[in-house]
Image (cartoon, rainbow, N blue to C red; front, side, top):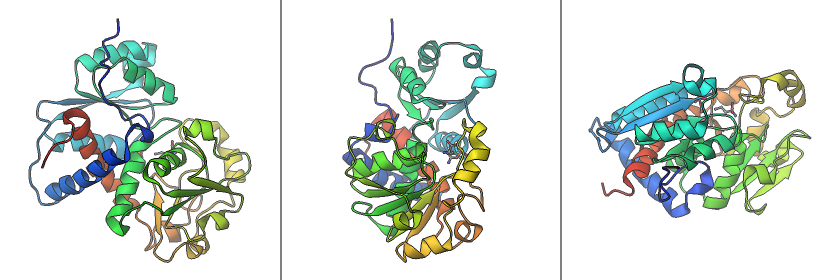
Length: 311
Ligand code: CP
Ligand code: NVA
């Protein structure tokens, strides 16, 4: 018998939330960030526990969830599959039953999206996707908040995605459908976006370009990511060759809008997917994106556990 609760809300991919929910989360993030910056306590999650399951490496995701939960008054427990029974073949469905009886919220970073879905289907408590092969919804939540904070509404804007059509790219594409903006994607041949894998309703919000310079032209955001994502290391040498022409450099930033922002989820490889000049340059907001993971995820955790709250 499953003990999953039908009404429980999860954040497994970007399109799980409506535009109205994101508008609430962005407003709430602003307030939560202000409280934090002015050293004011905000402890709505006293006695609540977050369990974080990691099957892949992480710096930002672990830190931002763990620090965020503590700053909200709760506690966070770190489980690595290598040293938990999950790494010895315990079914994710069984782990979900047990973990969700002992906690109020679960965050998981793993391989296939199906694993996260099986976890959620057997959990009594909300589940957050902290990155899968297919999606990275918390990253795009932070990236869009960063854009809004620095430039205003994202509706109608254009994001140029240069490089691999990976989990971060797929999430930008879903976000474009929910929040009504455009994504211009340029990948090397053979690495194009797969509409079904990206979980899109259609192709109205994105366009694929063979030429990365054409994709970057007049963009409001130019974004990229590593050429080899976690789990694909065996393809590294081939990818280094295939992606060589898809580096975001100063020439590419010059064809984007003059006020365009450069974004990268991190970790980055200067000299591969982005030149050091752009990465460390004035249009780069990579450290703000990383910091905003903390603030948006605090709003997200509060929302998933308590629902909408007034101040
Ligand atoms: N961007 C991001 O998710 O970073 P980590 O892999 O360090 O968590
Ligand atoms: N696409 C990268 C993102 C890391 C945060 C990966 O999946 O490894």
